[in-house]
Amino acid sequence: MSVLIVIPARYESSRYPGKPLVELTGATGLSKSLIQRSWDAARAVKGVDRVVVATDDSRISEAASAFGADVVMTSSECENGTERCAEAFDNLGGEFDIVVNLQGDAPLTPAWFVEDLVQGLRSDPMAEVATPVLRCDGRALNGFLNDRKAGRVGGTTAVFTKDRYALYFSKEVVPFTSQTFADGSKTPVFHHVGVYAYRPSALGAYPRWKAGPLEQLEGLEQLRFMEHGRQVLCVEVDSMGRQFWELNNPEDVPRIEAMMVEMGTA
Image (cartoon, rainbow, N blue to C red):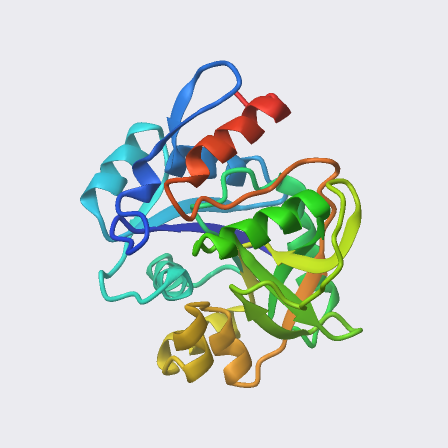
């Protein structure tokens, strides 16, 4: 089964305009833009036939082309990354069996997250979409809770059935727990990692659906699949001791840079 990775990237963002071009400094002092680090993460994934950056902005296109990325231009009317992936897939001829949406705000995404995700979709014929979830340790959960107290979105959490089909995703921390957890301890909260693998039938249908009330309230694109009765498989992944964080706010830049130094990422 052929696999396409699309990195959707837009310049305009209500929380962080110009985010894809923000520079991040790694452990060696080397500075690269967020979109380049996302490209590097995608290129590290095994078993992928093609990787492209999908954007509607000439600044992102020029920056991505400068470091050697394959760029597909898409419409400025795309409402989210999934719609941009659908348009990019169509523009490329629709000849892939699985399309992966590796959103350009998660440069610390390990290659095995995506590999496990693709394998999960291949192994479950009932699933039309798959997305990774990572069990939070106390450090990650406390970070989410502190962000919410400060009025920031620190990440998205997921709850799912015993068969791993999604019940809900939220920018609030769910499920609620009154228990306090030490940094290294396991918690009952799962962090939704912003990566998706789609079957072409589900991806093709997505832009034709109107955004439902839950998607509009949460601002989470994956809820559109659920509001239209499609099965979203949550694939639990293993961090293998690595920290994972999405770049959602300017305050996340030093946090991610510190994680890169800790992990020795160049």
